[in-house]
Length: 235
Image (cartoon, rainbow, N blue to C red; front, side, top):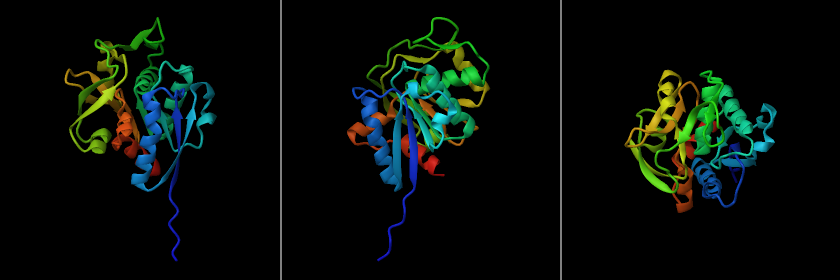
């Protein structure tokens, strides 16, 4: 009898403060398990509370990092440290909702040099790069147009998608233009032109979305970006 081939095993860090009552947190394990089954690999994941992340050493050994919804985080610096670690070390990264917002914040501070870059949900001073949305997107669903030939467009395989949100903050209008001057590019926007997804074009896989695509797993739907993340981590 032939032995079954040994499956690849990936270690995933889920960075965020776990709350069983958060729909996205319920969905994430389902999305990972489904993607792992499709790719015929084993995916082990650890929930890393932001309070547990104090240095890069806390992140060593993970094949991919996902900064999950659930902001404000108990330790903002822990979330930012994880994002920076993934960005600087070429580790596949996914950020959703709060993860998207903090990926923007980390990039503004550490790449664009906006040391006073701030998030309106938690800061009262500084230059706001994350601001309240003109219209809340809590429990809303909307269409998103994807930039062709990007990681997200290739993952979905279509130019327009429909996904759900649970957020009240997004990229400040005054900061939006700054993104086109660097390597963190806008790759998805709604019908009003508001930014809904970004990618770091100098990185193997660094994708962040304001929408919570992982929640599709609660309805038994495949989650293309989670498959793409695991595929990138497998190499």
